[in-house]
Image 1 (cartoon, helix red, strand yellow):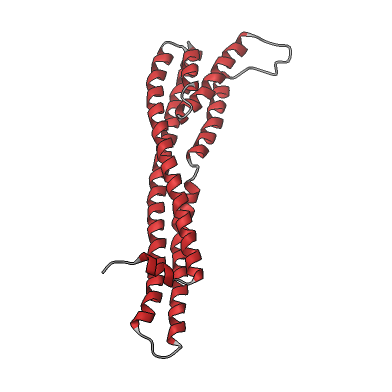
Image 2 (image 1 turned 90 degrees about the horizontal axis):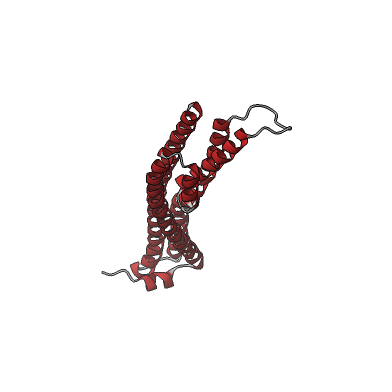
Length: 228
């Protein structure tokens, strides 16, 4: 026995229709967020791998300017964006250490300057990576309750029919179906949103680890350079 969606829609009350349309709208935007994040993370991962491989060669040659130029060409990589900030601070700091102006207020700490530059951009990149995830979390937690609201309204409609006396299954069935479809839709959207949220959260954590690792290694490079 097939599920006649058109018949179910026609038998829905106006309130349940509004709830259903609302959940469908949320699911459409959810799919957009999922697709956009998949593309963004794929590009970020590919560019990050290529940049980290190139960065090792630049640092071995003590070529900070080359590493900086390469980072500026990989805008989709959070690792490259973080390193661009740190390398900019390093290049500017090297120039600052060569001169001493009349307004100097103390010794210039190159390592501290580079570290602060890295930390500032890491926070911004982490925030960018999490774009859209709060929406998925909201959908995952809210849609079961929205679907339950439609279920309750559908059941109330069934009770209204029962108040009229004897009714047949043909009269009660559409109201019960209305209630079940609303619940099923809410659960389906919530499951997809929850799974996507958890998957993307793990990807963000992986990017954060990569940014921290590369930043730490870069700070070690700056320290070794200072001692040399």
